[in-house]
Image (cartoon, rainbow, N blue to C red; front, side, top):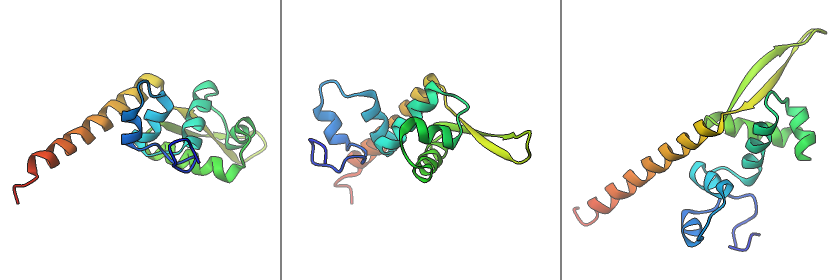
Length: 130
């Protein structure tokens, strides 16, 4: 459990962020995209180590490969990572993952937050009209 009472790993809620005077970027990212702390840490690891494989990330993050795979799937779904297939000299292939560049990720955050704010404003304006 975190200090706010939410299970660790769960994304912070908007109310929790609004109570913080200076929220961490990772908390904002987790909240806006609805991703876990593990997924945010995976994104940051990819920023530092572009072209990483699941096995490399698992070692760097000290997590098992299945958890890293799930985190990467979530990052791919949210546009926060890209995957490329690399052919191996010995035959077969391996996937390499690269984080979406930080300026692009920030733009995605702004867009997602702007969309949310627009929906909230519409709900506020529609309240009581029924």
